[in-house]
Image (tube, rainbow, N blue to C red; front, side, top):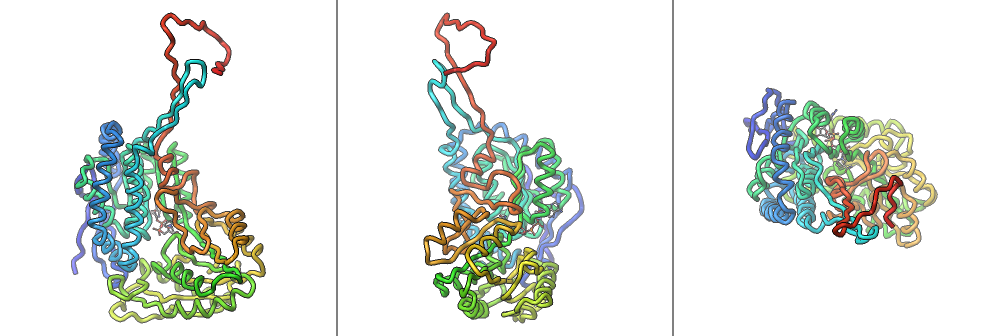
Length: 500
Ligand code: NAD
């Protein structure tokens, strides 16, 4: 099979790279290289930023209502092409098509939110802040904004960023993961078909070289990043040092507390979906269960039974619940971590190593894996595994469970399973995590709320989409004005003006 060669998308058209470096895109289910993608050079980034910079003034001056109409057409096209995008995501990532459809849909909902931009960009106004003096605020676009995205949501994570940025009047340069660039390139074509002027949205697949060029480019005003914590920290520090506003979302280790008063069958169903869906490669996957008191002994057999029933296979076949992981290197890393769990004394309840998938002998498969009696010093607790491995820790009390979670460096998502409003309410209040579920295992906020974790899961101040997204992609300007009456002279004063 010859691999198709992809391209960059600059100034509303396909463009070759100025360099010769290519990345290989695998189908993780077959292990085959299915596409090749140019890796953008510094010159390519310069070209993309220049195109965005040239398109920005006219786009900024396009009324929010007209921008919203283009976004509405884009949303309609995205809905029409939702299954095509889901197939692309499944092919390059490995997740099941059904799962991919859900994630594309969640991304489309951000466009839907951004269609309300005329309302979202309304500032504040106050009459008579001083005698005859009125005050109002304006939300103006930042300029050229850039996004850098991970492999695990080929459509949804880019959609957290660029629809809101563009709706607010910015031009955008997207650097998608070099492992899964096809959805982003296709979305750029659809956005053009919806009527977006050339240069407002550019897509530059690439690796570290492209990222560094964006971080250093003087004409880029804001950087949005989603990916692993070490890279997120680097992005945050470098972009801030270069005077840009920055939001950098990092990795996760999401815990679910299961209280003894929870409905155990309900909790087990929810946890198995949250742990093994997308082969555990979700930033909001539940990878860690903290079973309180006697909950553990009742929960474990239910988890094991359900996890063992998951059908593993190609994401584009029916009845499959879980596909492969993204790469051979990632598969090997997960296998090493599973081995370390055994060596360090955890109880391996279900072993996904050595799984056979008919027709997927060269694919990057690992079966559902379940550990019990894990302790915080073990590598399988300390590391973000990002694979189909669920670990269970035991805690004596609700307080011990909360202490454990709050001591963890990550703070992306968490959940509590309980039948008691008392425990749930305390948990909401006491937990140091950005997104919290009560009997909801993957509490991903809807588009009209904002998405973001705490601690090592997010560097920066503002979360993505929702009103925090609007705040990130706009600068506030406050105007104070007086219209003096003819010949009204107040005289000059050298004291600090107090308007009241
Ligand atoms: P990654 O950090 O390896 O890559 C993310 C992006 O950064 C990619 O575009 C990549 O090309 C670029 N990149 C990689 N290494 C770089 C480097 N040294 N310098 C500059 N740029 C670099 O992440 P990934 O493997 O693609 O995605 C998985 C990670 O993303 C997991 O840690 C997961 O938890 C995290 N994630 C977090 C969220 C969230 O909302 N917090 C959402 C999705 C994924």
